[in-house]
Image (cartoon, rainbow, N blue to C red):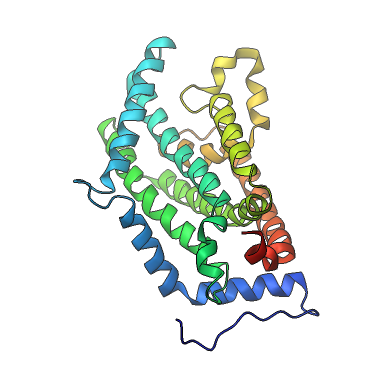
Length: 276
C-alpha cells in the first residue's frame, strides 16, 4: 500500500450524512481486506495455544456450569431448566459486553493503521463485527450442546432467535462507532464503560430469573439489556410470554442505533486521525 496514489481528502461542503454514508460504502467495499484482518487478528489472539479459539468454548462452558449449578442450588431451581437458561445468557451477554468493550477501542486501537494509510475508517468497524461473529460461533457450540443435552431441539423458535441475534450484531455495529469515537476523545470512557457493564451484569437476569424479584419483577421491563437477552434466549427455550415486548424494545433500539451512529460518526470521524 506504500505506493498507492490514494490519499485522504476533505470537502468543506460535504455534509456529515454524506461523509458517513460514503465512508461506510467504501469500507464495506473493502470486505476482502477487513475479513482478512479479522481472521488474522482472531488467530493471533490464540497463537501458540494447543486448542486455539476453542478456549472461548471452554471458558463459556466453565462459566455457565459454575453459575448454573450454584444458583440452581441457591434458588432451588431445577438444573435441567436452569443450566440451559444460564448457558444462553452467558453466551449472549459475552457478545453484548464484548462488542461494547471492543467497540470502545475500535478506532484508538487501530490508529497506527489509518494514520499511515488512507483507508475508510469504517473498515475497522466491519473488522470488529467479523471478529465478534467468529467469537460467538465458538460460544454457540456450547449453547447448542447444552440445549440438545437437555431436550431442546430445533423448531420455529430457533428462527426467531436467529433474527434476535442478527439484531444484536446490527445494534453492536452502530454502537461501536459511537463508543469508539467517545473513547478516542475521552480516554476514560473505556474504564467507565467497563464499570457500567459490571454493574449491569448483576442488575440483569443473566444467572437469575426476573420472577425472583417478586412484586418488583416489573422493574426488569425497563432494563433494555433484559430485552436484548430475551430476543435470543426466550425463543431457544420455548418461552414466548412477553417476547413480543422484547422484540419491540430491541426493534426500537435497532432504529435508534444507526441514527445515532451516523450522527456521531458523520460529525466526528474526520477528527479521529488527530484524536487517536
